[in-house]
Length: 243
Ligand code: F6R
Image (cartoon, rainbow, N blue to C red; front, side):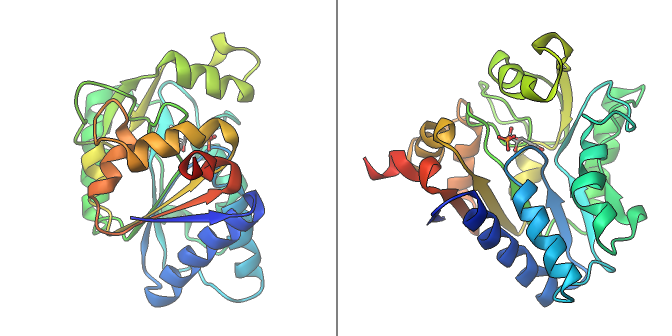
């Protein structure tokens, strides 16, 4: 595992975007695993600039997103489907038919998870997975637990995650209580993983996940067992590693 300390959110975003751009250049038909949330927004902005400058081409790229709130229509601005279009897909030359986000409105949750897992496999697996890290150490919506969930599954969000995500909603009551998420096994099957982490409120999670014991109580800690992970932190998120 490589942990890179950058000065701030902007530099973190540039470093992460450079790694993703290199992936697209080396393999123009890459399958990118993507994340939502505050952490990757700057990375997506950098990728859009690179596209506008003619540095990268998304026309052969396929994407699979990590997760989606259960019961959230795609037209809702808080849906991860909406987020991806708004923050990346609408601004680059990607074929939208090759972009995939779990369907939060699927009537049969179990079937949706099974089909999403199959979809990830059917596109050939993920070449590069971009991740954020939750304050409680979650990756995707794999919350702290007694065991690592292997495949795409339906998750009950923890109070910590509801609290962290309420900033996007009118109140904590409006945050969905469940989500569909790729499993730890799905994430670990990616060939390459890039994690972007910023802010002092993530410093403890960075230390625990990347230098502490590997345990499902800190789901991101499993990444220590992956052969090709780059964690890109801003100075604040990195700070606990220097103590
Ligand atoms: C988002 C996701 C989550 C976030 C994490 C950090 O698709 O899967 O694991 O990456 O909650 O969120 P932010 O970046 O908003 O702090």
